[in-house]
Image 1 (cartoon, rainbow, N blue to C red):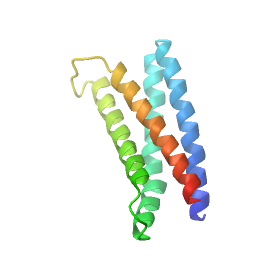
Image 2 (cartoon, rainbow, N blue to C red):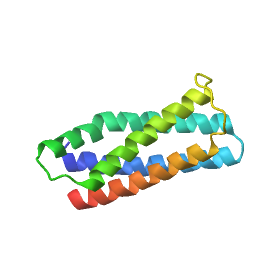
Image 3 (spheres, rainbow, N blue to C red):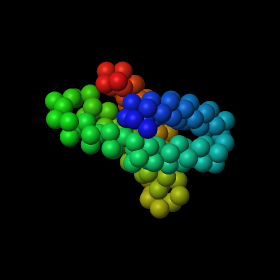
Image 4 (cartoon, rainbow, N blue to C red):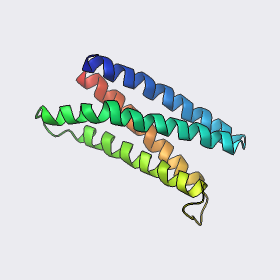
Length: 130
């Protein structure tokens, strides 16, 4: 599979993941928190797999091509890493491994907002590069 096809597949799966997380938000609003957590865990697990299999090699290829520094690529990459780290932290809090004094609602909303921003930056980069 060529790079453009991989990027296109990744973009489609990212859009589906975004819809999946919106479904998880609806579940949380309905107080179905166990289902919410399971959906988010699955989404983040798939996201980590996509980062490892598609996005990291693409990023390394982009850097190796001696492309000039692109602030949007850096911001997209940084937001993606921050979101994954935030959701790992949330999972540790929910499972009781880490204690947190405050509710997770606002940090989770912030993580979702960052994910949406990263998605649209990624879409813009896809349209610019491919």
